[in-house]
Length: 359
Image (cartoon, rainbow, N blue to C red; front, side, top):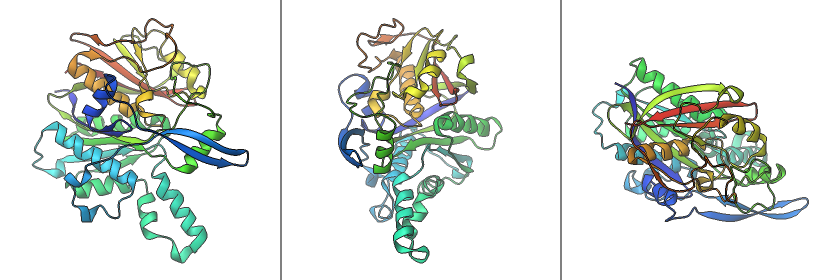
């Protein structure tokens, strides 16, 4: 039987849970965008940032266990709890559930906090809490303990290729019979240092993201975590394929719709332009969750929801009129069979592709 997405949990600027994402896609809710003031040697600049809204974790985990968890870990744990709950499954044997998580940057706030502690307090007085939570694998380990999942565990970090790598590895574990289910998840967080870096990259004066306008930089940073329970059975949709390709050799041909994880970074514009050259329908949903290396995770959540409901949601781009007629500009119904491809490109011209099909 084919591998399927059985449950989804999202924590983003739209809020918590797949319903919050649906509300954003339908135009009934808007992302939480906060203005951050960043000081540079050239003066103080204001940067709009998509900040995740993570609420309700105490409904799943005892408050006493949450005290030492940083915001990034809380996002991942909450998304994981939501995904497991959304699946509706009762897991009898936690040893048969693996975990594959991915992050482009890791726990940035804890990492920089640990570095600051090292410089200010010396080797002997580095904060053990900050150091422990700064380790990339800390989130997967904590989720494993909190949810009682004792299968194999791995964390992947490959910038824009992270989401593809996570799904490829998770599907491999199921194909090889290593586990019955895999809890997968990808996420990143915002911190002031990242905001400073965004300003240096040229994203000054930006007020809105235009991911389908490849002529300029409209990147705005975001944060969040998207989690999925993958296994064999009936769910949101089937996972048809995972592959890493050169963007110049990928066209979107054969897919009924292609979701681009473009987020306004001009360096990736050429790669995305090549990817969509033969696509029939196109969308980019970054204006709902902001720019981050694992944005493809949220696009996969949108794609899975679309396939379950038989509905394509409009691309929330504010690019005037969007001259390309292939861009999805209004809600559209479709029948089975239907295939949606998601692709995220990096600066080297690579593309990580995850293809989903009707359940």
